[in-house]
Image (cartoon, rainbow, N blue to C red):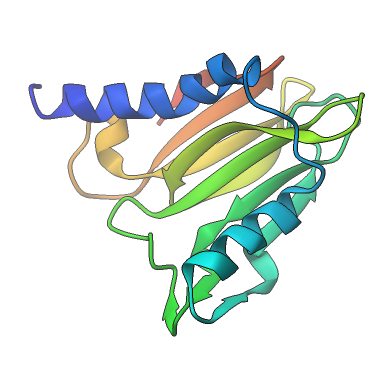
Length: 157
């Protein structure tokens, strides 16, 4: 339990900190340009796979949001340099009606499915089994819904 607590706190902080920071962060015009510029400055040579960016409405408000999959980044010949046994970094951006985007969350996951549950679209994120208090075996699936500007966990399997 002692080793699991810091991990759970990190997950909570990753999902909550961007929400708290929204009031202080400025909107960006396009997450694709923002993220690509960041990696082009970090890498001598950066290339981006087709799955690097997905535009979809993740919070059911009718606006196209953006999900960035850093596993689709190749930096100086290394694909997914931030990927590890916990998966790859995904950044979730919400679009606001006033124009622009802000980052709602960052998560280290294997991937996600966007599925309909109880009439709403939700994210079923595949994560390391330890996030569901398991060791080994199939990935844990954490199902979340975006309400307002935060992720709300619906279930863990």
